[in-house]
Image (cartoon, rainbow, N blue to C red; front, side, top):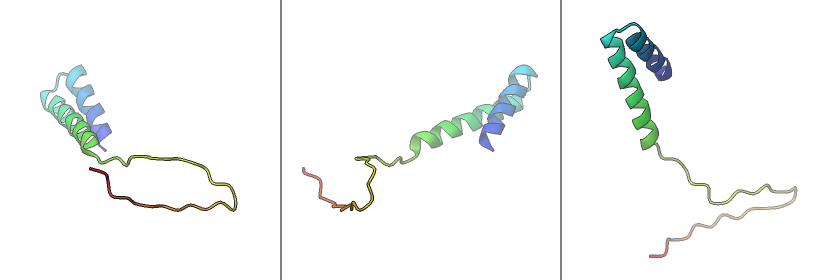
Length: 65
């Protein structure tokens, strides 16, 4: 929904000269950028494909200070 608002707002705002649509497009674009920047992305520490018969042990350690 937001990408559509950004596209439509900027298209109507820039090409047709509509200030309200320009404001909608810019606001939706800024909201999208802020939402992406604030998202917590998980960190991949290790990636490996297991073969049949292999197992996996996950151990959590306290970080060293």
